[in-house]
Amino acid sequence: MRLAILFLSALFAFGQTSDTFIEKPYLQLGDSPKLAASESLVLLWHTVENTDKWSVEVKTSKDGNKWRAVAAPNSTLVDAPGIDKHLVYRAHLTGLVPGGDFAYRVLKGGTQVFESTSRARKAANQPVKFALFGDTAQNTPGEKAIAFEVSKVKPDFVFVTGDIVYSAGRISEYRDKFFPIFNAETASAETGAPLIRSVPMIAAPGNHDTLLANFQKFPDSLAYFLYWDQPLNGPKVSGEKTQHQILGHEEAQPAFRQAAEARYPAMANFSFDYGNAHWTVLDSNTYMDWRNPELQAWLKKDLAAAAGATWRFVAFHHPGFNSSHSHFADQWMRNLSPIFEAANVDVVFAGHVHNYQRSFPLKFKPVEQGPKGEVEGAWSLDDKFGDGANGKPNGPIYIVSGGGGAGLYDIPQMKQPGTWQSFTNKFISDVHSFSLVEIDGKTFKFRQISETGAEVDSFRISK
Image (cartoon, rainbow, N blue to C red; front, side, top):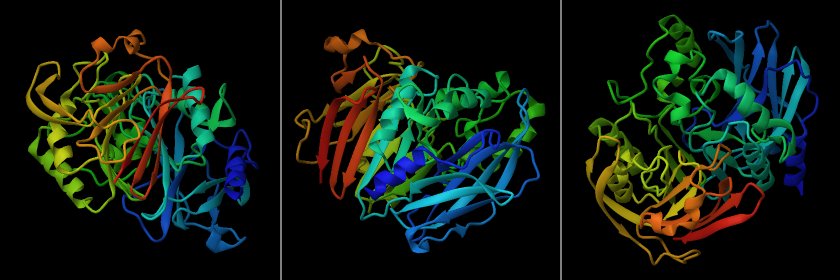
């Protein structure tokens, strides 16, 4: 009951004025890849340039009924062509109890202007629930319905498998298509939900977020590096095909780099722990070449360091294994399959294809990559692993969860199983949907939930 009350209070935060914020406060993991005895989150909000004194206070179970001030927030100036200058504030909510509920409030000039509640990152011995989807912010009825349905299941965090905002990851598009839906004032299938003020959201970059040509054409793009705050523990590799490189609009680049700080380009690849799971998040865009030995060395080292985690997940945008006609040749991430298998990765999550697909557990030996990105090779399938099987699958399961709100792909193909690849177990393309995962110790329960709240697929892994 207490959790329900806290969540409802978050959905209907009070003490706000409509002209205080450009974008109201929302939560991120921050540069905190590891679990800690005293947890933290980062709170961000956007305002016009001002000289007001801002402060943030938290209240946890350790604080009793007293508000506790956290360190003063810092701000960065965003100065992009065609966009009014504005400030992005970041406050570190520290001293949080692992898995514990807490309240926070934002004060401007000593007056409260925002209040909400959330939950700190779970410890390794605590159950975890997360929601996952990709290809989302297109300001569609599907996006709004998914935001609402996700808010109803009350996840501990939300993960986005890329293509966060359409169609070029621009500041203007975040304002029109992302924040109004995922940080809406009211919760409904028609409006979205005040989700991200209460639930941290974590994301991998997709092609519509950080693709190379974006900055040339749209100098207010690459907002991923301005508006997100995630771990910075990715590969320290420089050179062509190892990281994003800005081209064009040289006069706008210095202001962007100053606002992005260390997040550009480091934040595109990272890893983090949550509960008893380790996540490795990769930038799968074509300006990266994951056949590069240095990049692979970082990936192997990151997964090896997570050998003690009960669960190991990898997430990126472009799926290596996909049966849709759409994006079928975008298979280059298959090259990493042997690394995932050697590290005992349990599930690989992707988006890019705007529907839901689940593979059989599989192992793959890549041979050669073609000019369009297709990767030839041989796979072996564990087709005995059924829904709800009591056992560990023989090989990673590959999930495509790209039905987060953008227009759906290949709807007729759902009823044409003869067009599916042999590794495809489930193919659902007629509804928007999101993945819901519940982890309790050595049990992993997966459900795919439609935009109306219906379960369209489920399975379980036990260790």
